[in-house]
View 1 (cartoon, rainbow, N blue to C red):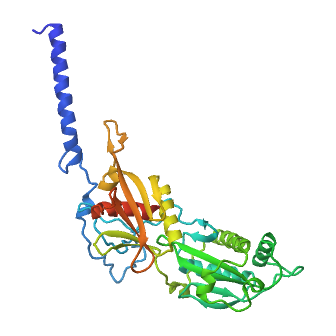
View 2 (cartoon, helix red, strand yellow; view 1 turned 180 degrees about the horizontal axis):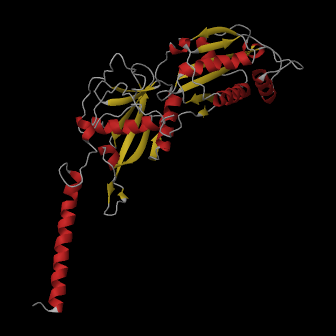
View 3 (tube, rainbow, N blue to C red; view 1 turned 90 degrees about the vertical axis):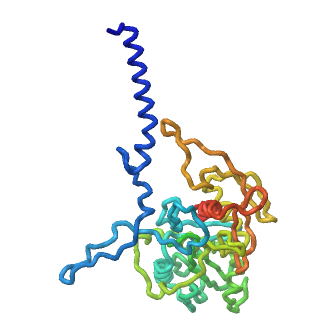
Length: 377
């Protein structure tokens, strides 16, 4: 018969042994597919594409629909981690799928909408029609609408557009002449987004001769205050009509270069190609890094280089490690360089390099570029 003290020690020993066994086996129970708790988080890697469900001819297939939209994987160039499915192109990292914003870069301004150009095109035409503004040119393939010349004389009726022009001219200390506006509807930085650029022309300030497409788009508005006022009014109109989802058949043919797409360079390394001028490409990468809370330790705009630090788990594609009670532990920070240089086919290409400006592993570069692409606006 055990004494009371011996019995207590024996119970403690047994408790320690049992607890150690449970802790040691816990990982096996959770992480394999045969334990008490089955981990199915990676089952999708073995999923296969099967034929669509065939509905008998005497039954309706109207109710057989996909319950969730599956994002497409556009232009999946470059390497990814072998045990991970490729990521779809992010649509909106902030989750704002229907927002209307005015983006600014110096004196440049444009609208960004969470809708496709084919949806925005008829709304823009309706905006002009409701304000009795005639158009002289509509090029759906280029996404261009140019208005006819119109007046904003004192004492006459002024719709929203004419009022915005008149107020803008007053703020810009301009007077007289006739007005014309050019609208450009373009693909946005992200999938299913649209940009609208506006150029205002006054015949006394810019000359009465019509400017060519290239001249008008590369020239600042005659009065920047008018351009800003028109963007505000158009943005407000589109925001109030944002629930309308009518699609123009003409607008569906609207084509334009994707402003951000994955590609590979001559060495086979993944790059993010930005079909933008340098000022905007630089600002886009800078804003993306800021939106993603990436630490920028230094930068050299003349060389097109950002010096950054990223947590190790982003480079490996693994989630942050967790402690015993589930609290995430940040990994070591890795110094990297983000290079923004001219691309062979126009625009600029963004590359991920190590601290010595040497290309990193393709899979790691892809993860870094995915991060920039996800948070670019």
